[in-house]
Amino acid sequence: MILEPVVYLLRTCNHRCIFCSRAKDDDISTEDDIKKVLKDFKHCITIEGGEPLLYKNIIQIVKRVKKEGVREVIIATNGFSLDKKERVKELVDAGVNLFNFNFPSHIKKLYEVLTQSKDYEKTILAIKNCIEIGGYKRVRITYVINTLNYKYISKFSDFIKSEFGNVFYVELNMIKVLGKVRKRHYLVPKLTDIYPYLINGFERFRKNNIHFISDGIPLCYMTGFEDRNIDAQVRVWNMNVWIAPNEKSHFKPCNDCVLRQICSGPRKDYVKIYGFSELKTIKDKNVLSDIIKRIKI
Image (tube, rainbow, N blue to C red):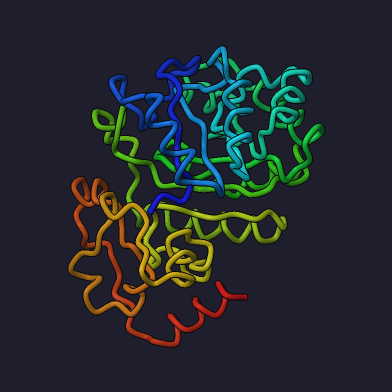
């Protein structure tokens, strides 16, 4: 299932993120691809790159998508040019509903290492501009969990609260072993290592009243926060759907787990590195019913 159909405009990017899941030779969307997406999906689409705001005709693309009747247009960006308020206003006026910021660390030096850029201050200003001009519900922040940043999730939440007040939501995603990460397995943390930091981070987001979701982390490693798993949310409302089944799967410990029906399991690329021995088998049916209840509420 494609929750947010994607239009890829270009491969070029002004950042060189060491955890980037896009490969240099990944396809960009052809005119036929764009026409098909616009025909088949009217709820929302995401415009990506590289960095889509480097695309010279981005305003025309956004206007075209809105003209075709797409309700929500999402721009996946590192914040390029959004440190200028007039640029933000131009994009909002054209029809952008949500800016999805790649912001992998609130720590300046770590941000620079992860993104291979010096745009830390510009990115923070870009987020603030989007909130000021479009409102906090216009901003989503994606935090890709890796070995260099997983210990700072709680402090990241505090930073979001103190620096921005609030955002629409934060998405905490397990790193994908795609693109540049295929040759950088050192960036992929073990589930057992991130677990205490992840749960503490989730708790801090809840205390800070900042909405968050997660992707790529099996439910047995989201104790008490299983309802914040995007796959589980979708499955509860539509049991006929699995998200990205080519990327995630069930393994031996999942066979007798009661969460199997709403948990997509770990990422396949993760299991290729670490195996599946870390996975837990949950047998208490009350756990499943509680998760479903929380999701529906």
